Image (tube, rainbow, N blue to C red; front, side, top):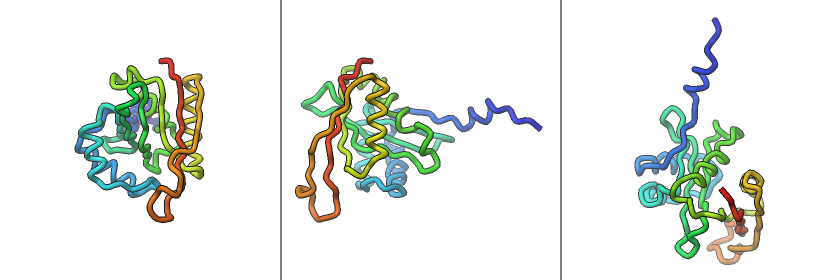
Amino acid sequence: MILNESKVAASDQVIFSKPSKEDGAAMWELVTKSTLDTNSPYKYLLMSEYFSETCVVAKQHNQVVGFITAFIPPKRPDAVFVWQIGVDASQRGKGIASKMLHSLLASDACKAVRFVEATITPDNKASQSLFQKIARDFHTDIHSSEFFTKDIFPGDEHEEEFKFVIGPINK
């Protein structure tokens, strides 16, 4: 028996959309299974409710398999700051994070956005590679600089964070 590959592929399709507040809990659960900084569940509910225009969820079979939390900084209406990107282990290596970023940048909320900003720790090579890919996709520059040094974090457990800026982006 030969399976219709297009039907199999369609059933496994990943859909990108704005999150609803009901997605917040699933976003938090995904974080708890990853190496991402774990924020309170409340943060994901707030982001899904009040910042849904600049956040993205990736769903497969109606389950959250990836997300982006982001916002447009009040003093930088031409930038979107990407706070977190999470992708379920079952979906890694499939380009989901890159597709979510493209979806975000194509959204109405990001019409005026010309720069993508994020902070990334020195050991997070996956995120550094993702943002370098986005810079290549948009044929633009990427710059990094010291931003949050280790000494300003409470305790000794958090690495420094470098600020990455991609842009200008011409859409």
